[in-house]
Image (cartoon, rainbow, N blue to C red; front, side, top):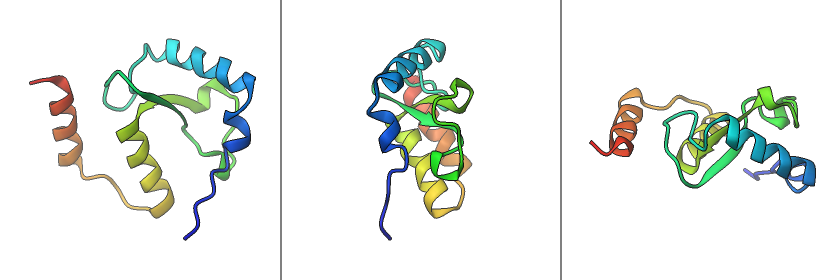
Length: 96
């Protein structure tokens, strides 16, 4: 299967870079899924390839690399994440 990044034309623009900073501030520099800070990626909640709005703040969220990769895996290949694995991931990130 060949992967094609449908949002490539979007994320290279100055408009996108400004919007990404806005979403970072809105999401308080944390992953919306697990709360992790650090390297965050701006994710289209509804993917551009599925008709998601490219520049709509309501269709954007910050995710850590791990959560973004997991979400993309589900979108591309189907299936669901194991709830126990998600609980474990959150526990490990909380430092407990």
